[in-house]
Length: 263
Length: 93
Ligand SMILES: Nc1ncnc2c1ncn2[C@@H]1O[C@H](COP(=O)(O)OP(=O)(O)OP(=O)(O)O)[C@@H](O)[C@H]1O
Ligand SMILES: [Mg+2]
Image (cartoon, rainbow over all chains, first blue to last red; front, top):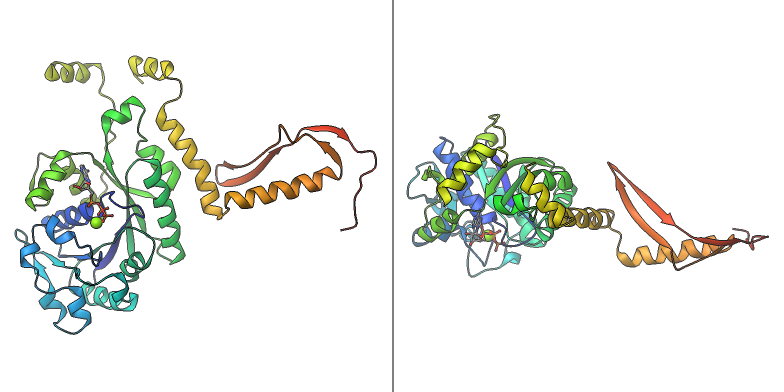
């Protein structure tokens, strides 16, 4: 029996879809079977970020309406055998699905796959409620800014109200240079405020944008900082004890070398 | 912490991330308790009405806030008293 995670944030644009695509890919590279579900009905993104937009034939809506069975609606990833996408319908909206129907889809998928990752739409309304309906656990994504952290706190409260207490936090788009200047909260600050378990810090990284331009999630790019960060998140989800690297200031020696390299 | 960083922070006084963190902590106390700013205002008025039965209060320096201390939340009020009323015009409650 697999486990379903809702990837959520409250605030829009902080990286839910990016996390779903890249974490799903990283888990599949580590040998796990994964389905990612786009629960952002009417504003689907996950297919294009993963480069699967031309392969989508059926959506979760078709499954619910009985136009095809669940197996048939799954789109296989281009590179990984273990990774599948269940796309969202683009012509319907969030009110056209009921939480009970999402729960049923998740239950069925969990019987065959190790991980089900559900990409939630922004907000706290029905779209979020549907996305969370079938989840056993939550991955809350935030960026280190006041608005996103405040909304993350609200979402955490709502998840707990639904008895979803298995909550992990990902801090996305951390900019080391800004942290160093004292102009961005670091991981300690955010965890201090939100008091949930941190499972990853993803740096601000141009490679993230490049990879979604190409429709190739990052997991196979060993050089991108963000790719390594996503791999570590996947390993932590699998229970490995991997310390979260601190984006610590370089000591005088490595600092000197960096300065020489940069000049 | 490196020296240039310390100096930097010193020159700029409080870093913007510290401001961010403090503001967040305060706003989240209200968010989490579901207390709207209006509710705080009503509470403030009620408290003033109550205390005015016993003291002459200066409303100028009056401060009232929720503070978080580790895991608990405290209501901290600072109420400047100008004089004690000789006989409290207390009503039976
Ligand atoms: N670590 C990162 N470094 C650089 N860019 C990033 C990073 N994470 C996300 N982005 C970019 O930020 C944008 C928003 O990301 P994404 O679409 O994943 O957010 P979202 O939370 O799913 O948004 P929505 O609420 O609209 O669904 C995208 O253009 C993405 O490429
Ligand atoms: Mg999205």
